[in-house]
Length: 198
Image (cartoon, rainbow, N blue to C red; front, side, top):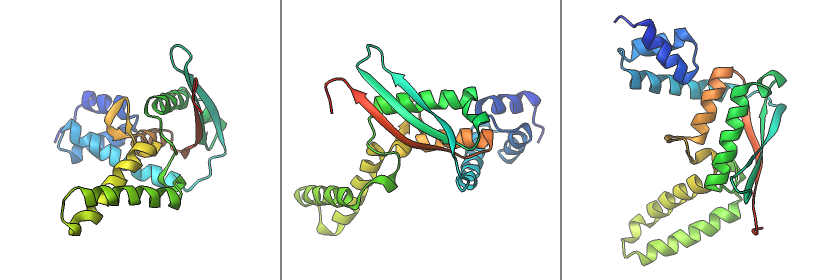
């Protein structure tokens, strides 16, 4: 199959992946743009997982204040080098993540920050809801697990649908930049302030 330079350029502009990777993805996808995009996203996740083993000690604290000054966010995002921390794409990532936090109000960065007590409490609530649903007892556990997964997607920043592209998660969005800059980037912590709320 003949892949045009224009196709490669378009895919590269969207993903930031190297030209040869874009060309290879288009070949594997028989020239179908959406399929090539999926292939690159999958590869991006693979790159992100290998980069995640490396320590990220550099980075920045990025702020976002919503219009009217009633809502603000501070988020610490770490990377491996000061060079990447000063990169405009890193800065854009920080602003977008801060806006995500302002809009979606997560409680934690990732699932591993949820305490066993929190999980137990939620399971207890969901089990009681399942019992009251009138559905057979044999499916209660599945109902509880399904609701627990939904709970994770609501309170875990990395699992939330990304506000600027709900077809991907915040974790996928982060992985795209990791694949592009070729170094580990992590969201360490955040604080969300709202006027009149604790």
